[in-house]
Image (cartoon, rainbow, N blue to C red):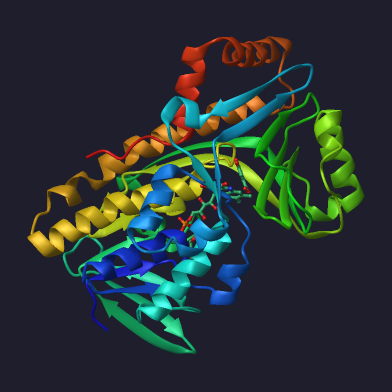
Length: 391
Ligand code: FAD
Ligand code: DHB
């Protein structure tokens, strides 16, 4: 098979890129290792930046989001024995965020790909990249026991943290930056009405968070030791811990119940540079990971796709390669901004095992600065909503 762009990975980054390339008449094929049902059952992100919302609207993918998504002016931070703080995105930037789950976005993207006749090949096994340093790379895979070959001009590696694309770049040609945290987020889903707001709660025993998916579906997280598994957390233990970490007046409003999903997400910050090697581009979690504090991961995947589609459209439609050359540097500037804010929010809102009293005093002082300084409030809101795209 021959195509212009072979996209590896049918998560939000790969599907969005496919959709936009298609809208610009650029031929592409998506290879996804899992079944569509599996991809649609993964529960992940829930908050969209204004840029992400705009991209979905620009490309005709916003109908359901605009019906059932909930625009939000910002996010609350509650702090044990201190006043609460609101990251007021609306006030400081004039923008809003949107509560709309990644699962819905992926469903919307698959529906659009099906409707438009997009080539999405699921259950593609043993995907491998070849001759990525040439102008005519190819990708091989197996499906139902038969080996296939896709010849293309470019490969887009949108295959998440564990996929083969990043590893296809020779080690001598990439630099990796990693920070692992000694805790994770234990998350549950429960069929109960959520709180009105997204809330991070700092507590001396660990962070807790309230999120939402729809009027009858709530998502909650608690900071947990990295070695814990969902089996360590009965529903009873989860709810006891969560309610204990929220102030009593807010805890009283949390509607608990039997959980329908429970999972542990390790926290890590990771960047692999550069994001292009020869004819291979990386986008989304394939190139970088942020801890979930700040809700940047999916949004960053979309911003990579924005820069990448722009480069590919300029190349195929206008014969211009300048944006191809600049893709990695441009995307990485925004990646590092998101790494920075996610890392700072993670430090601010979590308890780090073994940390000394000095570090705790600095944490409390960072929070106090937010409470009293409009300049600090403005700066946080500006970073939290996501930097504007570079022209
Ligand atoms: P993925 O979603 O990982 O998709 C990659 C795809 O590639 C997958 O479908 C995978 O099956 C496929 N693949 C892998 N290997 C192969 C292979 N060998 N061959 C073919 N295909 C392959 N982000 C936010 O912006 N906001 C949030 O609120 C937020 N909350 C989060 C909460 C949690 C608990 C977690 C875990 C993450 C959260 N994130 C959030 C992060 C967000 O979910 C990810 O950043 C996002 O999924 C990245 O999209 P992606 O398409 O790059 O990668
Ligand atoms: C979710 C929301 C957040 O604000 C965040 O930082 C992480 C996850 C969520 O909706 O799942």
